[in-house]
Image 1: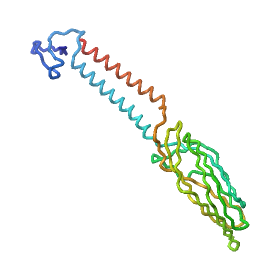
Image 2 (image 1 turned 180 degrees about the horizontal axis):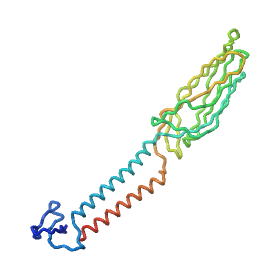
Image 3 (image 1 turned 90 degrees about the vertical axis):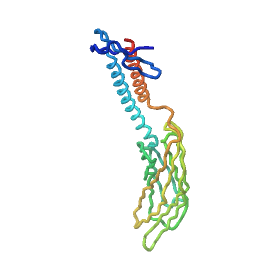
Image 4 (image 1 turned 30 degrees about the vertical axis):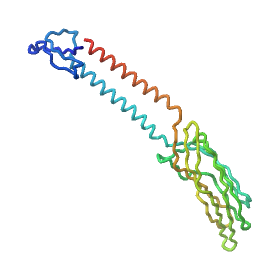
Length: 254
């Protein structure tokens, strides 16, 4: 059975066994009155190992905290998009889409409200008419997202007496859009609220068209984690392991 030796300058110990660890004992602590400058105190060794374990635990807690912070942002997704659209028959109506800009991010709940889809121009109509407004939203991010297309019926009501002309566009109900690519795999809900506006006078009126993204979430994470996180975590684990092994070997070989 291996011994864990405690050196003491007290003559009361007389080499008697002081402590045992385990049942049956795995380690025996003996007391010796003679020691030299090369000897180490077992208490110091145990205390040193305890401090090392405590420091290692603190470091690992910090590393896992950083990783957890990254995972908490798993459903905070980036969105970029562009749009095209047209009225048929036009009757003077026109639509100017948007080009892809910088990424905008959802909230932790996966929501992104009032995203700009483009501008509708509504000039003074020559009479009442109705038709279909076709709109395509091209989602560039999340990577691999489907591109929803809408065929929304519209109605123009020209009011000659009060010069109050109205335009109403009824969009379909909420659509579920899926994506799968470098941003991960998941889906989100996409809605365009109905548009109902009234213009007055002869100048052309313009109206912004907006959409809403809700419940965006991942069903699986992106396949490749950040290289920096992997290197940091591996370095900490290797360092803690080597330091602990060296300290234990040095302490219990005396």
